[in-house]
Length: 95
Image (cartoon, rainbow, N blue to C red; front, side):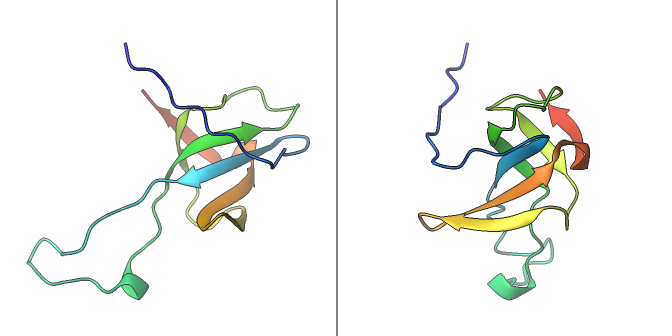
């Protein structure tokens, strides 16, 4: 059984908001071998829930989720990019 890493954060979402850290998509090359510049890469839709508001019922801290590509508000803390979004913007959970 894997131990889930707990990440301490100073941010506490309100109501039905969740605080998500996007997973890095380390794709440097396309399938055809062409290098993709950082500015041309699309943001991942996969993330890990780092904190939840008191009204959140469907996800919990540590869940791996799929979320809307352009949803939420971006926040940068300690050089890490997070997104604050409504629980309804979560499209699904990964096992």
